[in-house]
Image (tube, rainbow, N blue to C red):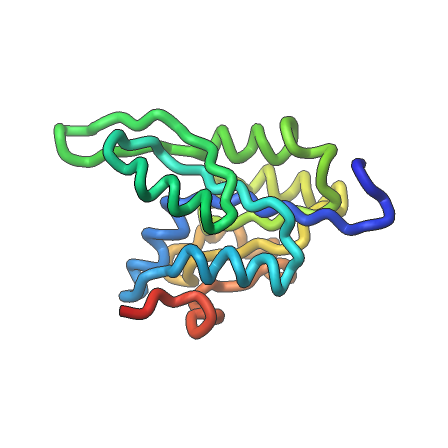
Length: 165
């Protein structure tokens, strides 16, 4: 580990799961407020935002970087000439347990996706999971029930992270 005197906390964020999970609750997340919340509440030094790359969204990506996110892009594909998908699960796992693993002491995973079950289990085993932030109870995978002591629901901090019109 880089620095044993200090607790280094990194956040790994599934942007689509977070964004869609909150939108399904009927409101929008303010990504700037969310980044500030992570820093203030958990002293997150680096927040990796895993996101599908869509040409034409460069202004959004610059804005997210200005908010303090480190963007990790996944190429996207179109399904039925309508839906664009950029599944970031593999990239999030790779970064959290291989590429960035030695640089942090504690991790925050932001997603309600059950595909990350093995990641959560490994981080718990290694005493590296600080928090599992789930967008909503409605969209949470039942596989995550085992990790209830680590969970925080974004809907519970809505007043701190909601995008106001």
